[in-house]
Image (cartoon, rainbow, N blue to C red; front, side, top):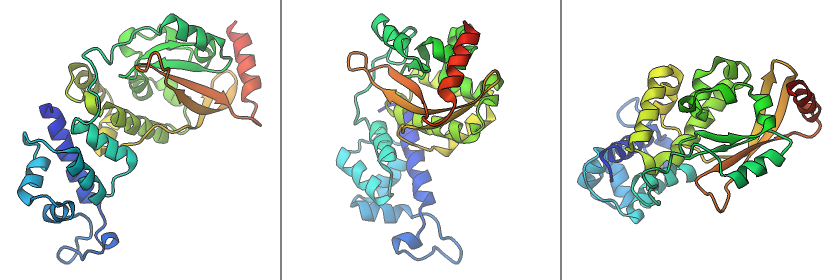
Length: 277
Protein backbone atom coordinates (compact mmCIF):
# COMPACT_ATOMS: atom_id res chain seq x y z
CA UNK A 1 0.00 0.00 0.00
CA UNK A 2 1.40 3.39 -0.96
CA UNK A 3 2.04 6.04 1.67
CA UNK A 4 -0.66 8.30 0.24
CA UNK A 5 -3.24 5.50 0.36
CA UNK A 6 -2.30 4.74 3.98
CA UNK A 7 -2.74 8.42 4.89
CA UNK A 8 -6.07 8.61 3.09
CA UNK A 9 -7.29 5.41 4.77
CA UNK A 10 -6.43 6.81 8.18
CA UNK A 11 -8.06 10.18 7.51
CA UNK A 12 -11.16 8.49 6.08
CA UNK A 13 -11.54 6.37 9.22
CA UNK A 14 -11.05 9.40 11.49
CA UNK A 15 -13.66 11.41 9.58
CA UNK A 16 -16.25 8.64 9.68
CA UNK A 17 -15.58 7.83 13.32
CA UNK A 18 -15.95 11.49 14.27
CA UNK A 19 -19.32 11.86 12.52
CA UNK A 20 -21.12 8.99 14.26
CA UNK A 21 -24.01 9.92 16.55
CA UNK A 22 -23.38 8.25 19.87
CA UNK A 23 -27.04 8.13 20.92
CA UNK A 24 -27.94 6.20 17.75
CA UNK A 25 -25.44 3.54 18.81
CA UNK A 26 -26.77 3.37 22.36
CA UNK A 27 -23.73 5.14 23.78
CA UNK A 28 -23.71 8.02 26.29
CA UNK A 29 -22.23 11.43 25.47
CA UNK A 30 -18.54 12.01 26.12
CA UNK A 31 -18.44 14.60 28.88
CA UNK A 32 -21.29 17.10 29.03
CA UNK A 33 -21.71 18.13 25.43
CA UNK A 34 -19.97 15.81 22.99
CA UNK A 35 -22.64 13.72 21.30
CA UNK A 36 -20.78 12.95 18.08
CA UNK A 37 -17.95 10.54 17.48
CA UNK A 38 -16.68 7.26 18.84
CA UNK A 39 -13.44 6.91 20.72
CA UNK A 40 -10.73 4.85 19.07
CA UNK A 41 -11.03 2.46 22.00
CA UNK A 42 -14.71 1.91 21.24
CA UNK A 43 -14.14 1.22 17.53
CA UNK A 44 -11.32 -1.17 18.35
CA UNK A 45 -13.44 -3.00 20.90
CA UNK A 46 -16.46 -3.35 18.60
CA UNK A 47 -14.22 -4.51 15.72
CA UNK A 48 -12.32 -6.96 17.96
CA UNK A 49 -8.88 -5.49 17.32
CA UNK A 50 -6.35 -3.96 19.68
CA UNK A 51 -6.50 -0.24 20.42
CA UNK A 52 -2.83 0.17 19.55
CA UNK A 53 -3.25 -1.53 16.18
CA UNK A 54 -6.35 0.52 15.29
CA UNK A 55 -4.55 3.72 16.35
CA UNK A 56 -1.69 2.85 14.02
CA UNK A 57 -4.19 2.26 11.21
CA UNK A 58 -5.68 5.73 11.68
CA UNK A 59 -2.18 7.21 11.86
CA UNK A 60 -1.36 5.77 8.45
CA UNK A 61 1.45 3.58 9.70
CA UNK A 62 2.91 0.84 7.53
CA UNK A 63 0.77 -2.05 8.72
CA UNK A 64 -1.35 -4.54 6.82
CA UNK A 65 -5.06 -4.85 7.48
CA UNK A 66 -6.88 -7.97 6.34
CA UNK A 67 -10.09 -7.77 4.37
CA UNK A 68 -11.91 -9.34 7.32
CA UNK A 69 -10.69 -6.64 9.71
CA UNK A 70 -11.53 -3.79 7.33
CA UNK A 71 -15.01 -5.23 6.82
CA UNK A 72 -15.45 -5.41 10.60
CA UNK A 73 -14.40 -1.77 10.95
CA UNK A 74 -16.76 -0.81 8.11
CA UNK A 75 -19.59 -2.51 9.98
CA UNK A 76 -18.78 -0.70 13.24
CA UNK A 77 -18.64 2.67 11.46
CA UNK A 78 -21.89 2.00 9.61
CA UNK A 79 -20.32 2.64 6.19
CA UNK A 80 -22.49 2.62 3.09
CA UNK A 81 -21.79 0.09 0.35
CA UNK A 82 -19.83 2.67 -1.63
CA UNK A 83 -17.84 3.76 1.44
CA UNK A 84 -17.03 0.13 2.30
CA UNK A 85 -15.82 -0.51 -1.27
CA UNK A 86 -13.68 2.61 -1.07
CA UNK A 87 -12.17 1.50 2.25
CA UNK A 88 -11.36 -1.94 0.82
CA UNK A 89 -9.82 -0.34 -2.28
CA UNK A 90 -7.58 1.80 -0.08
CA UNK A 91 -6.58 -1.37 1.75
CA UNK A 92 -5.57 -3.00 -1.54
CA UNK A 93 -8.49 -5.39 -1.94
CA UNK A 94 -9.43 -4.45 -5.48
CA UNK A 95 -7.36 -4.98 -8.61
CA UNK A 96 -4.72 -2.25 -8.84
CA UNK A 97 -4.80 -0.52 -12.24
CA UNK A 98 -1.79 -0.60 -14.53
CA UNK A 99 0.44 2.44 -14.77
CA UNK A 100 -1.50 3.71 -17.78
CA UNK A 101 -4.99 2.86 -16.55
CA UNK A 102 -6.07 6.50 -16.53
CA UNK A 103 -4.66 7.41 -19.94
CA UNK A 104 -7.21 6.84 -22.72
CA UNK A 105 -7.05 9.68 -25.20
CA UNK A 106 -9.34 8.26 -27.90
CA UNK A 107 -12.34 5.95 -27.97
CA UNK A 108 -11.81 2.72 -29.95
CA UNK A 109 -13.37 2.88 -33.40
CA UNK A 110 -16.08 0.30 -32.72
CA UNK A 111 -17.25 2.18 -29.60
CA UNK A 112 -17.18 5.50 -31.42
CA UNK A 113 -19.44 3.96 -34.07
CA UNK A 114 -21.81 2.92 -31.28
CA UNK A 115 -21.86 6.47 -29.91
CA UNK A 116 -22.50 7.83 -33.41
CA UNK A 117 -25.62 5.67 -33.83
CA UNK A 118 -27.28 7.26 -30.80
CA UNK A 119 -29.58 10.22 -31.38
CA UNK A 120 -29.25 11.47 -27.80
CA UNK A 121 -26.08 12.85 -26.15
CA UNK A 122 -23.48 10.25 -25.24
CA UNK A 123 -19.75 10.24 -24.50
CA UNK A 124 -16.97 7.94 -23.31
CA UNK A 125 -15.10 8.51 -20.05
CA UNK A 126 -11.65 7.13 -19.16
CA UNK A 127 -10.67 6.00 -15.63
CA UNK A 128 -9.34 9.49 -14.87
CA UNK A 129 -12.64 10.92 -16.17
CA UNK A 130 -11.00 12.22 -19.31
CA UNK A 131 -13.56 12.50 -22.13
CA UNK A 132 -12.22 10.16 -24.81
CA UNK A 133 -15.06 10.41 -27.34
CA UNK A 134 -18.52 11.83 -27.95
CA UNK A 135 -21.27 11.92 -30.52
CA UNK A 136 -22.86 14.71 -32.51
CA UNK A 137 -25.73 15.13 -30.05
CA UNK A 138 -23.32 15.67 -27.16
CA UNK A 139 -21.41 18.25 -29.20
CA UNK A 140 -24.73 20.00 -29.73
CA UNK A 141 -25.46 19.94 -26.02
CA UNK A 142 -21.97 21.08 -24.99
CA UNK A 143 -20.65 23.01 -27.96
CA UNK A 144 -17.18 23.65 -26.48
CA UNK A 145 -16.16 19.99 -26.22
CA UNK A 146 -14.27 19.83 -29.54
CA UNK A 147 -12.32 23.03 -28.86
CA UNK A 148 -11.23 22.22 -25.30
CA UNK A 149 -7.53 21.42 -24.99
CA UNK A 150 -6.84 17.72 -24.55
CA UNK A 151 -5.27 18.36 -21.13
CA UNK A 152 -8.50 20.03 -19.98
CA UNK A 153 -10.92 17.58 -21.58
CA UNK A 154 -11.75 15.97 -18.26
CA UNK A 155 -15.29 15.80 -16.90
CA UNK A 156 -14.27 16.72 -13.36
CA UNK A 157 -12.05 19.58 -14.54
CA UNK A 158 -14.75 21.05 -16.79
CA UNK A 159 -17.52 20.88 -14.20
CA UNK A 160 -15.45 23.02 -11.82
CA UNK A 161 -13.63 25.36 -14.19
CA UNK A 162 -15.85 26.05 -17.22
CA UNK A 163 -18.24 28.94 -16.45
CA UNK A 164 -20.23 28.17 -19.63
CA UNK A 165 -20.98 24.65 -18.42
CA UNK A 166 -21.74 25.89 -14.92
CA UNK A 167 -24.36 28.30 -16.29
CA UNK A 168 -26.03 25.38 -18.05
CA UNK A 169 -26.52 23.47 -14.79
CA UNK A 170 -29.26 24.90 -12.53
CA UNK A 171 -28.36 22.25 -9.92
CA UNK A 172 -24.61 22.74 -10.18
CA UNK A 173 -24.02 22.44 -6.42
CA UNK A 174 -25.75 19.05 -6.22
CA UNK A 175 -24.26 17.77 -9.46
CA UNK A 176 -20.71 18.75 -8.52
CA UNK A 177 -21.09 17.08 -5.12
CA UNK A 178 -22.25 13.83 -6.76
CA UNK A 179 -19.37 13.96 -9.24
CA UNK A 180 -16.68 14.36 -6.60
CA UNK A 181 -18.11 11.58 -4.41
CA UNK A 182 -18.39 9.21 -7.39
CA UNK A 183 -14.88 10.04 -8.57
CA UNK A 184 -13.47 9.32 -5.11
CA UNK A 185 -15.32 5.99 -4.95
CA UNK A 186 -13.75 4.92 -8.24
CA UNK A 187 -10.26 6.27 -7.57
CA UNK A 188 -9.35 4.47 -4.35
CA UNK A 189 -6.89 2.02 -5.91
CA UNK A 190 -5.26 4.80 -7.97
CA UNK A 191 -4.49 7.09 -5.02
CA UNK A 192 -0.81 7.88 -4.97
CA UNK A 193 -0.31 7.47 -8.72
CA UNK A 194 1.42 10.39 -10.40
CA UNK A 195 -1.46 11.14 -12.77
CA UNK A 196 -4.14 11.03 -10.05
CA UNK A 197 -2.14 13.24 -7.69
CA UNK A 198 -1.47 15.76 -10.45
CA UNK A 199 -5.16 15.99 -11.36
CA UNK A 200 -6.29 16.46 -7.75
CA UNK A 201 -3.61 19.06 -7.01
CA UNK A 202 -4.54 20.97 -10.14
CA UNK A 203 -8.23 20.95 -9.25
CA UNK A 204 -7.61 21.98 -5.64
CA UNK A 205 -5.56 24.93 -6.84
CA UNK A 206 -8.09 25.96 -9.50
CA UNK A 207 -11.34 25.55 -7.55
CA UNK A 208 -12.07 26.29 -3.87
CA UNK A 209 -15.41 24.47 -4.34
CA UNK A 210 -13.61 21.30 -5.42
CA UNK A 211 -11.10 21.62 -2.57
CA UNK A 212 -13.97 21.81 -0.07
CA UNK A 213 -15.83 18.81 -1.51
CA UNK A 214 -12.66 16.72 -1.83
CA UNK A 215 -11.82 17.50 1.78
CA UNK A 216 -15.28 16.34 2.86
CA UNK A 217 -14.40 12.82 1.62
CA UNK A 218 -17.88 11.97 0.36
CA UNK A 219 -18.13 8.58 -1.34
CA UNK A 220 -20.97 7.44 -3.61
CA UNK A 221 -21.50 4.76 -6.21
CA UNK A 222 -22.70 5.95 -9.60
CA UNK A 223 -26.49 5.99 -9.83
CA UNK A 224 -28.72 6.78 -12.78
CA UNK A 225 -30.49 10.04 -12.12
CA UNK A 226 -32.19 12.98 -13.77
CA UNK A 227 -29.97 15.66 -15.31
CA UNK A 228 -31.24 19.12 -16.25
CA UNK A 229 -29.46 21.51 -18.62
CA UNK A 230 -30.37 25.09 -19.59
CA UNK A 231 -29.16 25.34 -23.16
CA UNK A 232 -28.65 28.90 -24.44
CA UNK A 233 -30.25 28.08 -27.82
CA UNK A 234 -33.19 25.79 -27.01
CA UNK A 235 -33.86 26.20 -23.28
CA UNK A 236 -34.45 23.50 -20.68
CA UNK A 237 -33.43 19.92 -21.50
CA UNK A 238 -34.27 17.08 -19.10
CA UNK A 239 -32.45 13.77 -19.40
CA UNK A 240 -32.06 10.53 -17.50
CA UNK A 241 -28.37 9.73 -17.10
CA UNK A 242 -27.13 6.17 -17.58
CA UNK A 243 -23.70 4.58 -17.71
CA UNK A 244 -22.64 1.36 -19.42
CA UNK A 245 -19.31 -0.51 -19.24
CA UNK A 246 -18.28 -2.25 -22.50
CA UNK A 247 -17.16 -5.82 -21.79
CA UNK A 248 -14.32 -5.54 -24.32
CA UNK A 249 -13.13 -2.13 -23.07
CA UNK A 250 -13.88 -2.04 -19.33
CA UNK A 251 -11.49 0.88 -18.82
CA UNK A 252 -14.07 3.08 -20.56
CA UNK A 253 -17.55 4.01 -19.37
CA UNK A 254 -20.20 5.13 -21.83
CA UNK A 255 -22.39 7.87 -20.36
CA UNK A 256 -25.73 8.46 -22.05
CA UNK A 257 -28.36 11.17 -21.61
CA UNK A 258 -31.77 9.75 -22.58
CA UNK A 259 -34.55 12.37 -23.00
CA UNK A 260 -37.19 12.04 -20.28
CA UNK A 261 -40.57 11.07 -21.80
CA UNK A 262 -43.29 13.69 -21.43
CA UNK A 263 -40.83 16.57 -21.72
CA UNK A 264 -40.02 18.62 -24.85
CA UNK A 265 -36.40 17.45 -24.67
CA UNK A 266 -36.49 15.15 -27.73
CA UNK A 267 -38.07 17.85 -29.91
CA UNK A 268 -35.60 20.45 -28.66
CA UNK A 269 -32.66 18.14 -29.34
CA UNK A 270 -33.88 17.70 -32.92
CA UNK A 271 -34.14 21.48 -33.20
CA UNK A 272 -30.64 21.80 -31.82
CA UNK A 273 -29.35 19.26 -34.36
CA UNK A 274 -30.86 21.31 -37.18
CA UNK A 275 -29.33 24.50 -35.87
CA UNK A 276 -25.93 22.81 -35.50
CA UNK A 277 -26.15 21.40 -39.03
